[in-house]
Image 1 (cartoon, protein in one colour):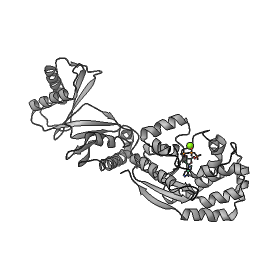
Image 2 (cartoon, rainbow, N blue to C red):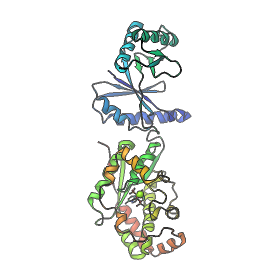
Image 3 (cartoon, helix red, strand yellow):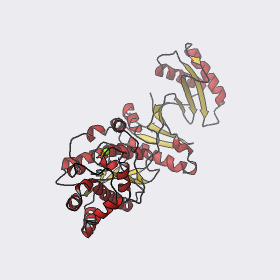
Image 4 (cartoon, rainbow, N blue to C red):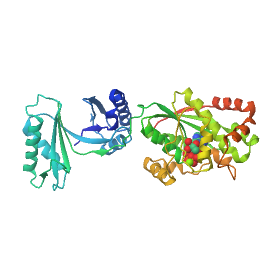
Length: 394
Ligand code: ATP
Ligand code: MG
């Protein structure tokens, strides 16, 4: 019965001149999500409203599920589309609608009419009143409540007439592509995919980098990261995933530096390389899944030491989250099951038994000096191993 969806958006409506940019990005992302659905669709954008029109048979659930992955959408309203064949036909269409959609008629309602086409022979007020009476005549159990109705029956007069009353919640946020691009440090864990999701939700396009350490890390560990990138791309759109071979850097740190500082020094090199890749790829910031106190390398002192190597802003959306809170987002967005697969991560191979929890920046810098010029070469070599793949959901 539904052949159109009205796409509601909240936050992007208040951005002044940027509004058009935001709306264009939203239309783009809606089209991208619809490509994954059975059926043919047209997306229109007029009078500050975005509609999805089904041009063929389509699967309602599948279409709604995919629209629910589009950041920027606050609500999805399934719309019934009727020809304008005079008031009588419209009143009939509206009562048919109510009959089908609301099995239980013990509800209050209000009719809200909007005329995008002003040559309609009745005003919006008259139409709302007349249609309200028609509904009451058809279903005497129903009652009008103009202040807090259970059901708001929207009637929009356009070239055709649109009727809708339901709103399926969207994910909120802002459309990806409306807020620049950032580089996500993506590991195989629970946190970093969630971090990527949360920053993408604010409209930021995501590139990702994964540091692997073959043969200490396996192809399966790499595949897990690819799978996670794909799950993130369901919301974030296509993700360019960079894979960097980090083995020689890790071995060199292992040879030269105190073992309790391995993780923190390694983290600093990851951040340095990620920043170089970010700048090369027009990313305006870095994203990590760090959260204060989660592990030794995420104490406030450790984070400060890690952060020191970066000049780009580092977005850490999980910084104040407890693990349980992160897990619940991971479950909601569908990355959790992949994240808990038991493949080794390059960081777990070289971890010390007693890593420093309060590193001192000067001490760390002094120990890094031992890495010498060879480290510069290794960093350059690592960057040369960069392999890029475009990861898409379906
Ligand atoms: P996650 O659960 O996301 O794997 P983690 O619990 O393993 O994180 P750390 O190892 O301290 O925590 O890593 C902190 C952050 O550093 C991660 O959230 C991620 O952004 C980044 N990171 C860690 N390891 C890698 C890696 N091998 N490749 C890319 N980024 C990484
Ligand atoms: Mg973590």
